[in-house]
Image 1: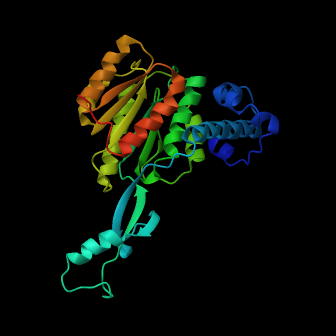
Image 2: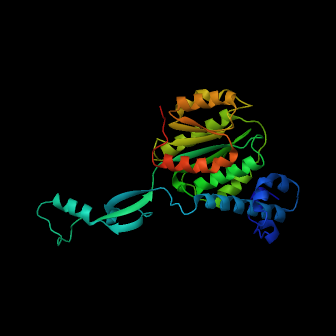
Image 3: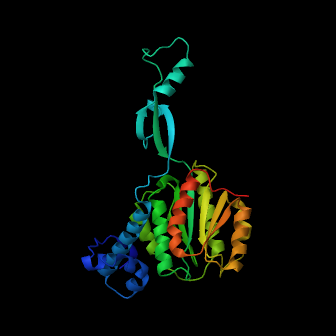
Length: 299
């Protein structure tokens, strides 16, 4: 049965499976590879995705999505406006700038205060090569879920790379967090680390987003261990990125040189993640800062 057919199966995981959700997420590819039963594969995937989303939501807790406060006319309010309320101060200031008008004028431009997501496009480029298996891959899935639960689909792109580069989500493409995570689980750690190919595909996505009328200032977050085992040294590509933030996994000093070179040429910076269990919280902080237009080059 094909992977697409497998996705359509209505998985009804047992309580026993649900009770071992995180362990199943960590051993997902091992467990899926040990069975030929499509129903069992689908059930394992459902449990793994549920466990990943649970961890991400626990990290987010009661924190609100990153929203910006804006003021506008009623007829100009966007569809995703939240916390709508009349703003008498802004309305009065506007009225004072229009001599001869009063509060009783039916055409007075009443202004409203509201919140909406930041318009800051974000691309995630995630290493899923052989070096990313087991708990590393599960924690990367949680980090991805943290972003999926925070960033609007219209401004988020997600791709993975190993021997090949694979797009999981294009900016503007519809898809729930669970659906994107299922696609992520289809990209097991295998093959070489072709960082050049991954960055080339990310540049095409950045260009495509700009051509469709999106902001040309796209922030790209690259998750890598700073090594490549296929292709050329990808440093030459860095200058084509609007902004590149490198999340380097591990403390290995030799790998830091490549990460630093990539970030420097792309007006970005490097954050070293010594312990993989810290990745989801780092990804949460980074994504919120990028949405607010921060986390740019420092010094």
